[in-house]
Length: 238
Image (tube, rainbow, N blue to C red):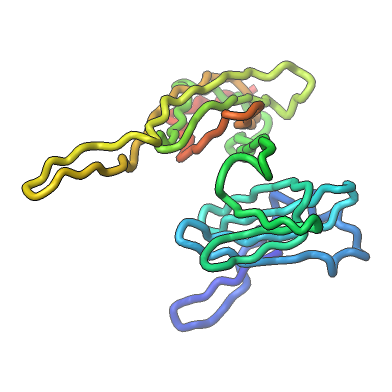
């Protein structure tokens, strides 16, 4: 799955393969069901995405792969009742065989049921698998305080899923409902706060390859991450 790049003079060239991170998902699609794939470009004031409705063998579950082409990130969604989606009056909706219409990006629930969220970072190995890396300074994570932040972070070292991973819970003091007060010459006005960030330290670690996972377990947990920063990593030959 490749993108197209357009240069200043209007010429289009073949871009990068944008589906490297979801190759396994694509390989699981039955060749006889390729024509069931549905695609929609989502261009809204706060969204720049491409949605792919992918047929799967799971009964009563639909898989939607969402590509954010600004941040070059994929999101995988599993929905119990979604067979179509479209933009109506600048609002994204999805629908299913039940006849219900769902407004997207409205809450952290699906038809009143909490949906667990999960984000997996690309494995960090500095392009070499056989050297030892040491996080000399703890990584820092920046969260957006205008959203709720109560989530878990897990370290998977060296692709070892059998060894107990290092887990830490992050609780962000949200200010999403806060206002600031301005007493002007003619009026008194309340404005919502903007660009409020909070920085938290993550655990240090020694590894060959490190995968960081962020996830939520129960209703009320959520996260809005702006970035994860690594300031100094020591590398040792083994």
